[in-house]
Image (cartoon, rainbow, N blue to C red; front, side, top):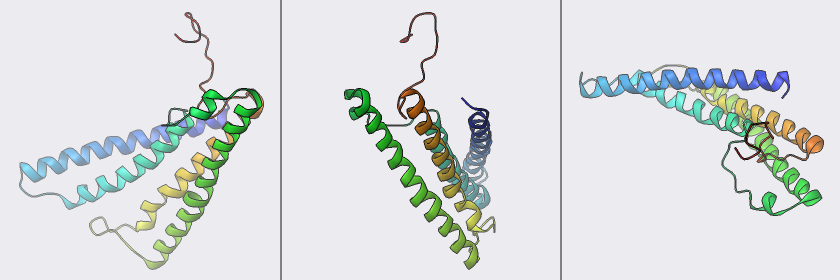
Length: 174
């Protein structure tokens, strides 16, 4: 694992953990203010929604980078050799294409249009483009991980769903 990948992993973990902790505080305060104080907080309600967007998108990118994402790996499991490498290359290419076209290109367009129109959130009064930046940012992270997967595939024959072999006392399955 390269230093750059460790850095990307660290930044994503830090942002996700911080956002999730703030999200939990917002939700607890929202429940308390709604049911105990009988005066729900609109600020924490909106903040929780926005933090959930960030946690979901960045969490998906981080999970992909850790090779722990949800996958239907029927073809990579039943194929061997060059066919398996080709199937894995196709999977990586499809993920990278989605991240590039939909998340980075489309997300950047969404952010630009939203910032140009001056749309702000009702309670927090922050530009909605700042919320939507999570889409292209997570797309960039996903694309980076796809590039590292492709490098791993060329170097080691290891696809996006294949775990790295780690030495252990009880063999490869322990």
